[in-house]
Amino acid sequence: MPRKGENIFKRKDGRWEARYIKGYELSGKIKYGFCYGRTYKEAKEKVTRCKAALLAGIPQPAANSRRRFSYFCSEWLLLEKGKVKESTYIKYDTMLNRHILPKLGGCFPLGISTQLVERFRQELLDEGLSAKTVRDNLTVLRAILKYTAAQFPGVFPAVDIVYPREQKKEARVLAIDEQQRLETYLQTDMDECKLGIYLALFTGLRIGELCALRWESISLQSRTIRVAATMQRLRDEECTAGRKTKVMIGSPKSDTSIRTIPLTENAARLCGRYDPHCPAAFLLTGTEQFMEPRQLQRRLGKYTRACGLDGVHFHTIRHTFATRCVEAGFEIKSLSEILGHANTTITLDRYVHSSMELKRENMEKLAALGL
Image (cartoon, rainbow, N blue to C red; front, side, top):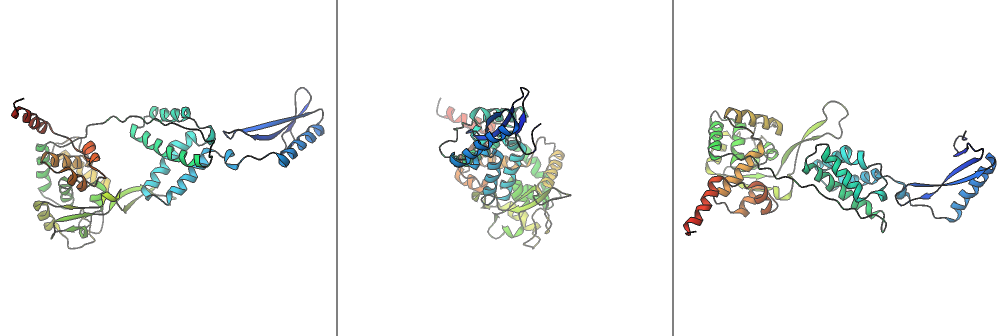
């Protein structure tokens, strides 16, 4: 039986074996040394001399080589906390705890390879995660690996990451007759909530931006809306019991999302009709009590079902606005700024959906040239 606190035990062949930590492999795995003796005392004396020799002349491994990948994940996240918005930090923390740490946290950093990351990627896809979610996880993993590599200069392995391709899905866009049907419904017995959705049809506001919009950001005189805030429901980091999420109002997702949008004459007139003359009041309620995004989404579902429209989410309203603008010959740079995009490529690739009528109209231009 081994003595308590010692790695010395008697073998089946009658000899005593003493084991000690001789060093560490690049992956962080422990390398053991072994000493043998005919008696317990002899084995202990031998292992004591070996340990003393290590302490006297052999360089000890850096502490980092014995740390698991989870340690560097935590260090990276802690550094990011002071750089990013709370919503982004919570997103990173969620990905780490749900996917990255359970699968890779126990690895030694220098043992991480392209093959290991590829297995991680495939496991996430096999679990049914969307290509976008897997890409997001791999993007975070890449950032952590870059941070970790800096802690092992010259020895950290090169790791290639292959991102899964996202299948581009055609977004739902309301046809002109569907949009007219929804507009008519919203203007019938209009209230503050219907007014908000109506405005979104003619401004392309995101759902969080609309929920956070207060009357102080609406100028009836200049007929503009100033977008400078958004609303989100996030995980509550300080929650110990009860609700695990909280509603937060903060700055929009990017600097380009802070913008001023002109209102049409009709939209400005409707706003004037519902102006509560209270700058702090929210547009969707007319009071200082807000309506959160999931409540607004439920309201929109109720309204669209009443109109006989299927598959309409709030982002459908934004896509529809962008598509109508293109059909009307909108200058793309102006449209990109109104939507709050960083560049026109995002506007064209994600939000512009040409209708069959517009395609036919453009095809007829060839006929006009005699082709």
